[in-house]
Image 1 (cartoon, rainbow, N blue to C red):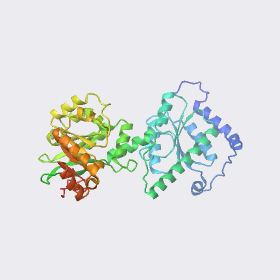
Image 2: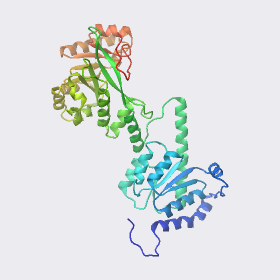
Image 3: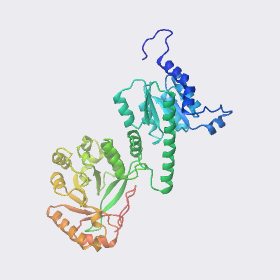
Image 4: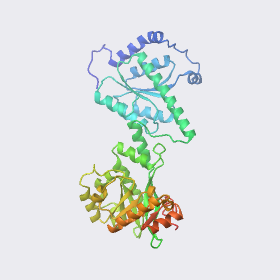
Length: 428
């Protein structure tokens, strides 16, 4: 709310606008920026403009002043006085930069920035404020604001900032085009807002790919592992999704979504097991033992896989939690054995029922005596501990036969079935 002022006293916005207009001519002379002649048509304006810029400010006088300065510098400037209208305009028209006030009703500038990042990772947003605040500035930059401008903004500073923003945007667009043409992916958003938007899209498109696990003894189906898959191109693999979730402290959302979606096609009468992957931090998720969840109701058929690639040292009281999970009926598996942390820490704390040999040990095991000795020793130790051994990444008949001879109980890999959205029966 604005402070009371005398009847004839200009508002801060009016004063700032007047200063902008008064200095504009001097600005162009000093900066050697020649105002462009008025276009004779909208098409001419588009052809001649240096770039399209959206100005968002609930103070109409100030918004028009910004737009006028930018137009005189050669930019096509549109004005919005409501951030919601601005967001609608941004979703339907192309712009190369946004200049937005921070303090606005409805959506403030930072909320507008976060909303923009849901559909554009590159569009530069310059935030303007008349009430500088360190916490707000940090938050603005954290969410990927291109620049943080303080009122009153001088015309030359505004034009220079927008010019650089437009150039950076065009370069980013060219880079993404090149990456797409070269087939090397597009990469995740580097700022927090971009990363949040990427993760949200990943969550919305998350789906489980089921890969069969086969029992060596009778070649029967033992179960399926539900593998994380997403359609979000900026997070092109499960590792990228989990890394983004960890950076944003959203691992629980990934775990809960995957568990819920993995259980959907599993009938209550299923006689096979379902392997669900857990990040170590998922162990402490209170929803993991929610009695109303479908995975808890089928706990006697669920194997919770905890990777050895992430240390358990940051998780408090793991043994108590594992005891609770086991009492609920779950079985515990240590995943990626042979590729994660050395030592007995994970075994001591998790007391697993199964171990999964990492595919780096199983690939080419038929032609490597070193791997054969190592796998034989590991299977023997695991058998002495009463653990079932699963070998992952089996792709050839020779690997399958060698691993069976070395004592593995269960096998998993492309040889038996590729990950699929449907629960397909394995082939031996």
